[in-house]
Length: 212
Image (cartoon, rainbow, N blue to C red; front, side, top):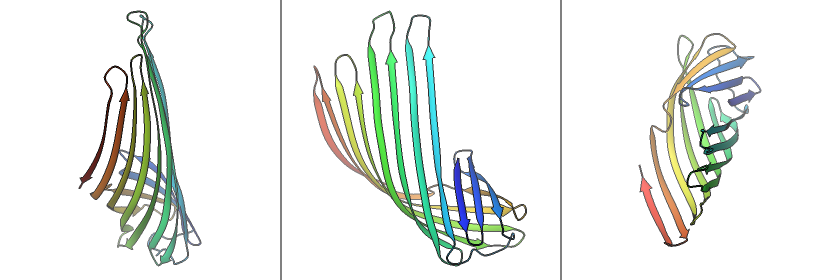
């Protein structure tokens, strides 16, 4: 669920659907073509949680657990233009038990922390349509640890990304709006990765990469 609220003149709530591209929005105290005034406050974010367990007749079991939370806040520095901050925290905890035949246990755990700034510009159009363009700058830190019967693998990463997301929104009435966005249609990034493996065949490396 992704929630955005504009205080002062406009309030918007969004539910994220279909690969984060299609949104339903609820508007309060706003007309379909109303500009968003300077000084309005935007509160929002997303949250996700998933857990799953698989078992078979041989006693093998696989468990998956992951969670991610990303709150954000912004302010309209001028009409229809917001700037703000976003934070993120997530973790995953997976395990595999091979069961009775050739028993072995493997665990994989990791965390992610992120911090970003964004700017979002709305442009009212005719017939209840709006255009928007959002730019983001974000940094993320990750760490993971994979443990099995013979080795331990740890990985650490730092990523920095710049991206643009254009979109269009349509107001069905004064309280309901749908938006479609092309997430990260343009982006550039830098990643630093570190890998270390202990056990019978030790290995370690560090890599830097750029992508666009």
